[in-house]
Amino acid sequence: MMRPDEEEQVDVRRCVCIYCAGFAVAVILAAVGALTWYVYEITTDPQYSVEIGAVAGLDPATDLLGGKAAFSPAFNLTVALASSNSLRGACVKPGASVSVTYACLDPPLATGLVPDFCVGPRESREELVVAGGVNVSVPGYLLPSLADGMRSGQVIFELNLVTEDRWGGCRMRVGEKASCHTAIY
Image (cartoon, rainbow, N blue to C red; front, side):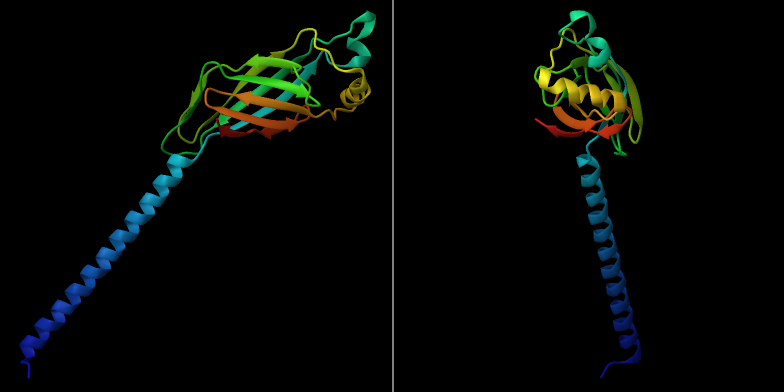
C-alpha cells in the first residue's frame, strides 16, 4: 500500500505528463498549421487580367473604304497584375507581350509589348498597353460578322499574354475585363 505523500507524488507526475503531452500536441499542431500556410503561400501564383478599353481601325463599314483591303487596328488595353501572396510580390519582366486575335486568325490582328513592372506582397497594379497591327487581312467570309459585332459591341476577341515563363489566354468583348489563366511553360 502507498503512503499518502507517495500518492500525491504519483498524481503530480501524472498531471505533469498530461500537461507536457498536451503542450507537445499543441506545438505539433501549430507547426503543421504554419507549414501548411507556408506551402500555400509559396505556391500561390500571381493573377493576370486584361481589359480592352477601346478599339480603332477595325470596322469594315468605315475602315475598308476607298479600296483598302486590310485593317490597321489599334487596341487600348489595360494589363493588371495582382499578388495574393503575403510573402512575396510578382513581376512582369521585360519582353512580355500581348496579342489580340479574332476568330482564331493567324497572324493576330494586333500585338504590343507590356512594360515591365512589379507589385509587392498583396498588391496589384495596372499598366496601359497599346497593341497595334498594320495591314492585317481578315477573310471575306468573316467581314459581315466582324462588322455586325463592331456595331453592336459584341465582338469577342482572344487575347494571349506571354511573359518570360508564363502563357495565358482569355476571351472578351470591348469594355470587359477578363482574368487570363496562366500556365508555366
